[in-house]
Amino acid sequence: MSAYSPLGRGLLTGAVRATTSYDSGDFHAAAPRCTGDNLKANPAVVDALTQLAAAKNVNAQVALAWLPTRGSDVIPIPGSSCRPHLRDNLATLDLQLTTTDLGRIDAAVPTTGAQGARYGDHGIGTIDQ
Image (cartoon, rainbow, N blue to C red; front, top):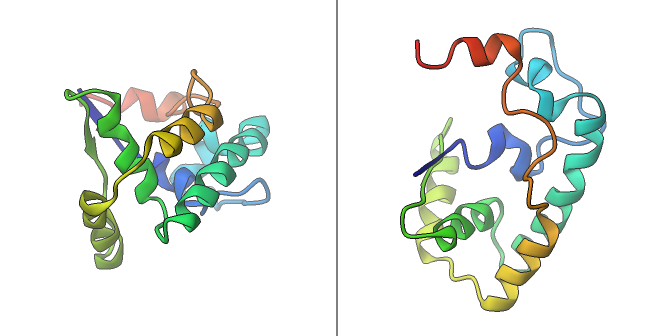
């Protein structure tokens, strides 16, 4: 199973906050996870992950390192819009999460995942085209 967009299009990087607003042409403006009540709820999960990442001197890589612990068939497929992001993503290969780290992540992340759908009506209509 592939984990497409495992950083939630920036949601898990801390770039999306409860006070964030987007221009109408921005993907996030129509993404249910980044609007309304979801925009207010999801940063709480991000804050917990950010604290763990800071303790390990990393950033969003903690989410990428967590995915393979979900099973040998889970393969993260992160996007990279610039070279620094690519370097950060590759650094995940050297990041070791302890049992305690995994417990902290499991406690922070709801079993249902992020609040809100991945795509709005328009976005879901473009999949598999």
